[in-house]
Image (cartoon, rainbow, N blue to C red):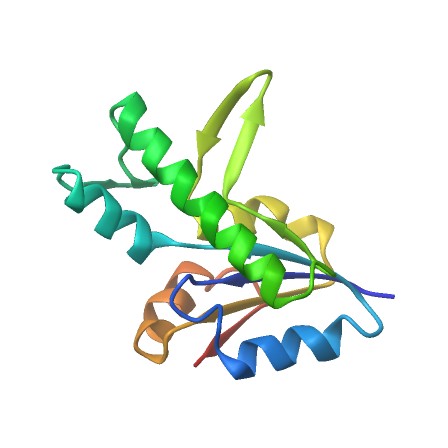
Length: 148
């Protein structure tokens, strides 16, 4: 049994290619999915009047309210994805916890963090983002980018 990590963009988590891939892989392997939601988070933050800024580590969250919005969107996406997968697959949001402090982390960076623990890693994204994802993971040979 292989350990397989799949990172899925919030823009493609209902795509048939992605869902079929997960279904097939889960028949014989242990699957963990990191669900992204960058587009949804940006829309929610803008709707609430926040300006979106990015730094070297990803989206910059400056306030408690921005953090709450971000975590709410991620949890909603996680619930939707778990429902689509009939709650059979472990789905993780891109948060890390230190003691009682939860920290947002860019989902691509979380893939790199978990890299050594998995036999296969697949990143599902929009076709237009394939090149940028290939650049992000160029030194991570196990990572396979799948554009849908």
